[in-house]
Length: 255
Image (cartoon, rainbow, N blue to C red):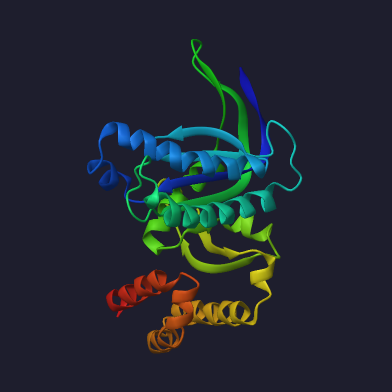
């Protein structure tokens, strides 16, 4: 019983629109679909030294740096998330052609990543224990995953993890206060690995995104709108077009 406090990296992954998907499928088809989806996702996680915590319906909870030490926990988590997106793209191309496995069209997921102190160990009731983790870091990772739907971004990470991934292609998206938490959190989209981070297109877009956020936070609405228009094609390419649309909607309210 009990647990130990460790710095850990936590991942939440969820299928978008799963309620809608399951509504149109028979129960046995749902089970087959989940097995076809969860198995390759877990293969990716385990190959990157993750501990699979639990499945919550269609969701996966995993973590790094327990029970064994993982000095590369941050990069392992980031690479695993990127590989999960790439693996899902491949599944969306191949699975619909397989007659024996139901696949509901184009499946999309959201991944939230966060790092920080957690309590990990055998937890539960006297009748049943499981090795798991709790703490503010875990709660925030779950909230971050939920915000991937709001911003239309496949992978969102917290500020602590972003600071631990200096070579990766990350872009600041917004500064928020999530439900049930007083402190604000800066969200970053994980776009790619070190190779992507060194491309001229990404470097230019990242700088332009920073300038856009500066204009937005200084309430320079005209300048913000102009920058969003200029960045439209790049934002679509790097997956931030929905986040920019949300910014436009907010500006209308603020005005």
